[in-house]
Figure 1 (cartoon, helix red, strand yellow):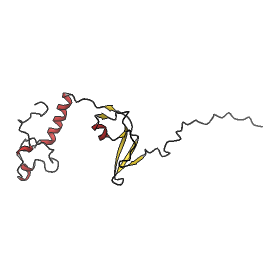
Figure 2 (cartoon, helix red, strand yellow):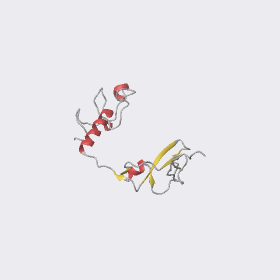
Figure 3 (cartoon, helix red, strand yellow):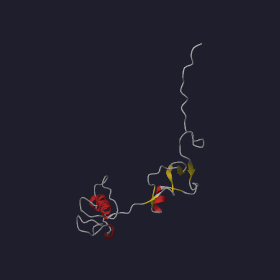
Figure 4 (spheres, one colour):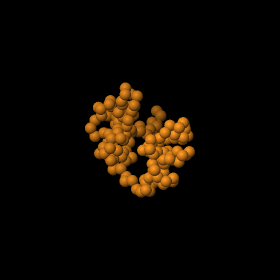
Amino acid sequence: MAAAEATSPPAVRDVDMYADPTGALPVHRWRQAPKGLATRRQLRARRLRPGGQDPVAVIECRGGKRRAWLYEIKKAKPIRPMTFAMEVALDKAMAARQTCPTCSRRYYHCLPLRTLGSCLECYDGTPAAPDSYMRHSVGQLAAAA
């Protein structure tokens, strides 16, 4: 009789018996998410951020064409306060999107610079409303004013 070979015990797996076997997040329909969960926009309205937590569920709307991640409100952290340096950096980025390279006017809305390359007044002569652009001098940022 051959000696029985020493075998190692089978690997033990930690299994959550309530977890979805596919590993997918639970999907809820529009306005049917459980209490205590919120989307990023809903967290932002409460002055919160996800704070590094993973989404715990998904909400579907428009017949499954749109999806949003849901986060636990209890694990959310308060938003970081905007410093002056962050405000100046954000204003510089917005100035690049709002300033016409032809006439150097800074508008209150983003310009179609990729498609038209300038404001409508410079592109085809459509007059701009006087209240649609800022009256700052060239190069002055709104945050530094």
